[in-house]
Amino acid sequence: GDSVTQMEGPVTLSEEAFLTINCTYTATGYPSLFWYVQYPGEGLQLLLKATKADDKGSNKGFEATYRKETTSFHLEKGSVQVSDSAVYFCALSESGGYNKLIFGAGTRLAVHP
Amino acid sequence: EPEVTQTPSHQVTQMGQEVILRCVPISNHLYFYWYRQILGQKVEFLVSFYNNEISEKSEIFDDQFSVERPDGSNFTLKIRSTKLEDSAMYFCASSVGQGEVEETQYFGPGTRLLVL
Image (tube, rainbow over all chains, first blue to last red; front, side, top):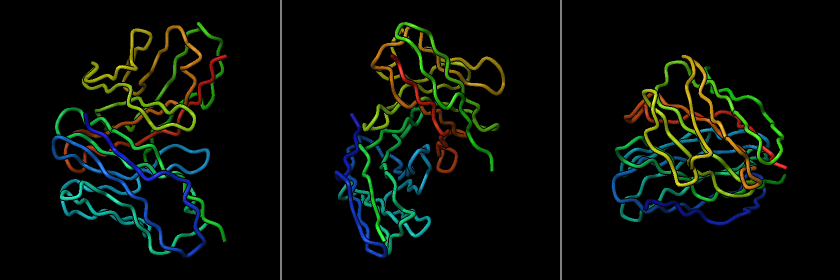
């Protein structure tokens, strides 16, 4: 079945460093791709999404590009802040059907001053 | 901004007891979901619900689980006889529908269930 694989964490960075969190997927159709973020003690918040190949999702300085040829949706940010410390989940929504989300394992990001 | 709400935020129960987790989805949304996240693990799909019936369920969602939309606003998850392994954070989510914009799922803050 469809699946999502994320790089294992934790990822520890200094403030203003460049961030990449890798995400690859396996899907039979043409899924939509998402990044959700979970801040400590909170629920899941949609960070960004892309619905078709070559689309770029962006929000709050984060970006991810839907790469069909490499089945990837890597999350990047040019300069992280301490407030970006959270767990980041890559997810896909299967084409058709009722759009259940399939999540990756999550990557914990810790940014220190 | 409209948001999904869930109650209670925390629930502690004894093994074998029934629990009902409550959710109020965003008012114009038509698709409703439950997910769970066992501590330190990935978020897992449980069930989706549309037009007053289950549209899809995972293998986790066995006969001990049920969902209901008892009125126009609430969406509930019932666990009939809780087991230790049901301890998890349970997230409710809702979406407008299907389509590029409508499919985005918005999540509630979760209910942390602890079964003793």
